[in-house]
Amino acid sequence: MGFIAFLILGLIAGAIAKAILPGRQGGGWLVTLVLGVVGALLGGWIGGMIFGSGLQEFFSLQTWLLAIGGALIVLLVYGLVTNRGARR
Image 1 (cartoon, rainbow, N blue to C red):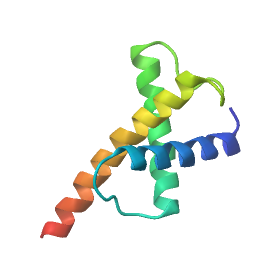
Image 2: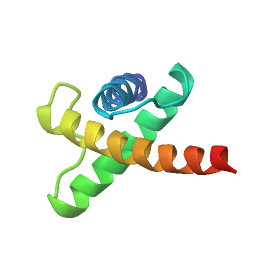
Image 3: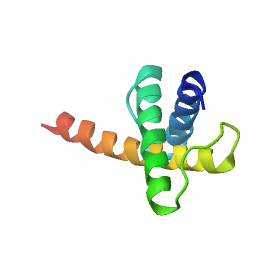
């Protein structure tokens, strides 16, 4: 998968993860893109470690599920970090 396709995958996966998570998450499109790309990398790494497969092709269901799952994890961690700083 190319670099531009990976950025698009990360942006869409991050937006879907934001829509799935309850509550309000901060950050705009740039934060969504960065968290989505980091989440896609994390999902690909986890998929490689557990299932023996990572991010293969852009239009593969496995790729999208791993990217969205990784983005959900990253968004949860991001929400915990940013909420803790706001409470002080």
